[in-house]
Image (cartoon, rainbow, N blue to C red; front, top):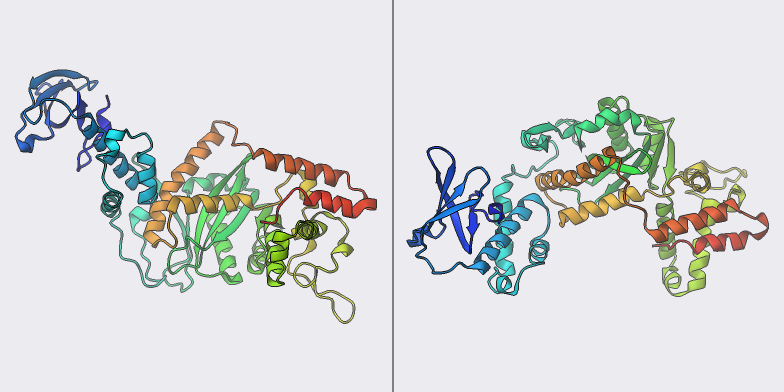
Length: 458
């Protein structure tokens, strides 16, 4: 029996015993005993019990109940469900339907027959969240954002706080940037050698174009989100300003490799602000770009219905990604190779060959994709459950999700092994490495076809 399974409307613990529920009346003079009375006292019930104040065990029944002759087990289960609903409403960003699904997983038939309707439960969730999140008014402009102290802070553990708003370009900036994250991460900024960056638009609060996340590898197999950046647009100037803020706040932040998607503005800003870093394009996004090209050329339908054509299309990405002879990619002009000039020379491409070729990365066992960032976006979307939350709901939700990242970081500290890559992906990686290591220039088509069997253009 656990008194904490049921709470009052004010959030205080109730005590459950033999089918009855009690609320605390007072402590004994010597502090050794707690006096409880039936929670139906306002209906005239005189039931009372005493418990031990040290271990919470039942001592004795002092007065019999007049509300009913026997306890009501189903009512207690309903109260426990309601307590669980309120807890999840306050501590997660789950939707009311998600909460209802979770709390009713192990409910008995008797409990289900007396539980609140889905509409009533949704009202309960919203009522709790309104009470928990008395947020400031929604600002009309980025200049007008005044971040309250409680949103600037992050509670690491009970009563222990640190800064969570790490960088702010200022309320005099029309293109204002806000950057959030654990202040603790600065202590290992000098070890952030392998970086992953990506933006997501679905969760960006109004007034901001995107949430731009920065992740860093820690050890051999852990990757952690370290910065969550609210950006007003996708211009080179904004990215440069962001990277300047990061370097200013974290002067020891000097990554060796930076994995990003194929966005010209990001690459231009990175080359300027981190000229010594090896900027790597993500193979996943390279494939996505080819898929978009198929769609714009009205070939996507054929790709989806013609297996041989789909295989040949995937072979194209391996020509540009894995084959170590640049002349083969002569057709891959403008963006990735460079436009052919009238004098026979090529204009500088937006993305140099070394940026998008994954041959050496494959041989070295390095990451070919930016999937850590993509996985983080999915986790954030699942955690929020809504698109474009207000800036205050975004920060409330981000802090709650941060606790999950903190738990994973403690796994790293404890030297626990991270979750293994899915078996089918791990096996595909091994097969790709074998093909690349055993490349035969005399059978290029077979080589490319073999690689193409090991991934899908999704």
